[in-house]
Amino acid sequence: LASVRLGNWDINAQAEGITYDYDVDTTNNNLAENFGLSNVVETLSTGDILTHAYHGKENTCAHNDFVAIKLAKEKGVVIDAGFAGHIHTDFGVLKSAFKNGFLPDTISSDITSFSIHKRGGDYGITMCMSFAKHLGMSDIDVFKAVTTTPAKVLNKQNEWGALKIGNQADVCVLEFTD
Image 1 (cartoon, helix red, strand yellow):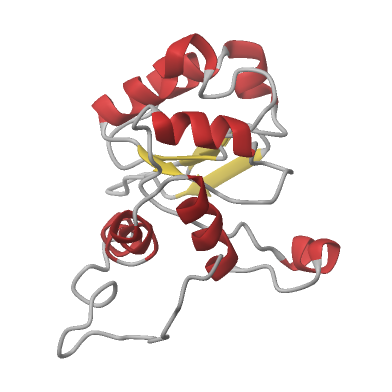
Image 2 (cartoon, helix red, strand yellow):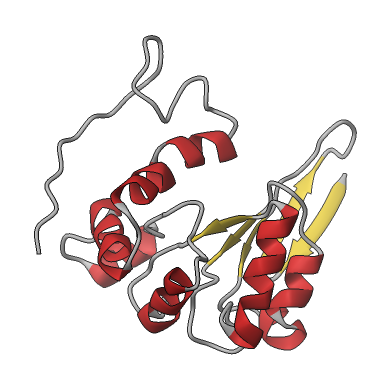
């Protein structure tokens, strides 16, 4: 068995023939806070996922002119917005990142069985999409971040993420309003 500890996460599995893509949550753990987000990104590889990078705590992605996000993008690390209201997302940091061209690759709602009861209301992926649009992402970038890119990240691009014959699809019609 291989055992890896990232922040508060233990990952155990048979090591033989298995490769991992890691999802590193940069808030509520000591990794980024003690070692710096850039140092955490140094340990990541292509396909690994960095989520909650737009938080407003210590060692956010905005530190040192977004050096951690630049490095992550160069390495092929997937940047996930991991929207969670003001819990894991600082909208000022996010807006600044967008203005500097550091868009997330994927947008997720960060809804868990715990958080759905804590937040309540109409929180969900469409609200996260709306946040991203109003903070500066284009419509096409928003839709890619919730369709084709997550499908590729999960290696499901031949099944999900696009309206094609043979693909699984959930379809909704949206109208952005102010």
